Image 1 (cartoon, helix red, strand yellow):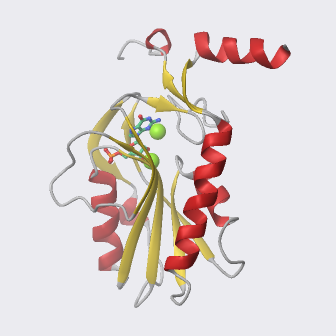
Image 2 (cartoon, rainbow, N blue to C red; image 1 turned 180 degrees about the horizontal axis):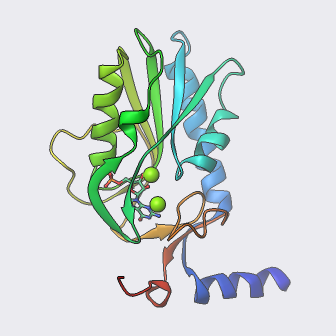
Length: 190
Ligand code: 5GP
Ligand code: MG
Ligand code: MG
């Protein structure tokens, strides 16, 4: 009963359920199994993009072999519910990627400009093989040259979503489900 009313409150105040905690859990497990098989004979670094992939990377990591290395880069391109088209923060990121295979993990693929910028940065640092795993991919056109992820958790409609790491103005990252942000919750542009 209590759970039901909590769900109703989330639905009306935050937004419509798109992916439940259970659906996400099962998909992350399946992605982990696929990735383990694909990399069974290749040592690789898991590279999570903060802040959005915080929970996804942590959950995926626990499906991978114990020796898997994990690193995080911080990159930002969204203001509110709108992409600026210019991912910021990558110039500051370094690391010894020379000759390394890297699996980049992000929460969501939208225009693709984030992954394109990450690809360029990793290649400049010497990474020899770069794959991408995104939990969500919006059905829409991508920036020319954007990498195509080897793994996609779910294809979703082109709407602004929150939860399971995805935020709106810094909020809702801790939600266990993924939701389409309710229109009423969106603040007028400053
Ligand atoms: P792209 O560079 O592909 O346009 O956008 C990728 C980044 O924008 C994601 O890593 C994520 O941080 C942010 N983003 C794109 N779409 C959404 C969305 O629907 N909700 C949230 N919270 N962030 C998004
Ligand atoms: Mg992001
Ligand atoms: Mg964000």
